Image (cartoon, rainbow, N blue to C red; front, side, top):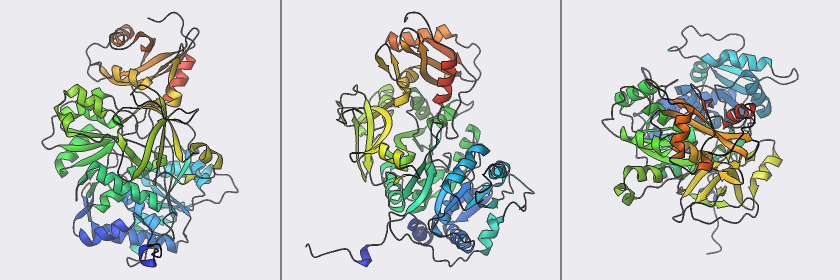
Length: 550
């Protein structure tokens, strides 16, 4: 069979953009996007995306150009996940909650040619434009006007046109620009995470196609789900679910912002079946008054930080079916998930929650995961105790960091992507993330997982959120410092001693926080990750702790 080779018929590049074309044929008259009182069908969404792609080409956008978007989870944001790459351009979603200085840095680094701007972000974008160096070619601006939120918004001389005018003027028969190679870039995402130095992560059509399909299979998403957009699309393209939901003809419920009452209301109104979010979303769902159990189960996929088992238990008691996964901006989505085994359903609730808090095994279509000694590169023991760095390999690993060959080479070694996350591997092959490498607390030569301490804190009935970081110590080098936020409506709040005594009963004494700081709300990124680098600076500013361990 050696003489058989690929032909032109079999060499069509894999791309997630093809999902939209098929879905417009199969589910053309079914709802695609619902936002407030507005509903689009899949044939309408397909046509609108083609029209915007056509207008982008008319404006001089060419393959390889970067086009940025600053918007929340509204219909235009969803459409642009298709429309921008359908023009041949590279899509760059920018976190709408960033300040003007940071946005100006990203626009300059990406050399963005055009920026779609939501009406409520116009001021920060104009400020960002003013901060660009004089010799920098400024991108064109397109205003996304949302009448429901900003009646009276108009296109000023700062903007070349409005989003809807691009829809109206575009050609619905436009032949979208297919990639020459499936390795061509499709998106550029800047890491926001818990660090203060974002990197530009570039992904190709093939990688996004692979993880979008794998995510559907792994989560068991059926045809025509009703998906609620509680996960920001600007965060790693919503873990590729804009394309994945299109592949199965689902309904996208868009919302500009959310809180617990809004989520519960939309679930009831639209019969929501699926949603995603960081663990903070689980906390929001469980820490609200009048949160009655759901009439019908809702599948919720969480990732972004290891969720405490106590939070998982409370969420599932309300009728949510929680699935847990792990991924990074560099993997485009979740590449590890806690694949559930039927026999685990017979275990006590506390044991089920503990098992579900593990990140799990690689998804279908991904190549490999391992936990290795960062010095030797050899696998650690699979005993659930030996710590090492999590490494990954698979088709959806990024092409690399934009304009950063050194950073790319440092993270890619010996056929693996080194994540910087610390974890353990169990004998059954399941991975559990213990910490970011910089978040491990080394106290008197003992490695303390801040995540393990946080998991205990979350079991306290008064604790709403918790984070643990290292505080300098004159004797031990470092000791755990806990930052704690309480639930609303408490008649009596615990004292520092109460929290410390609670921890002493549930963990080895060397792991117990020596310091507890109470805050109304912990600092977070726009995607709900607690900013430990901010808390580390606070703890460092408190000076060294003194005295013996308790």
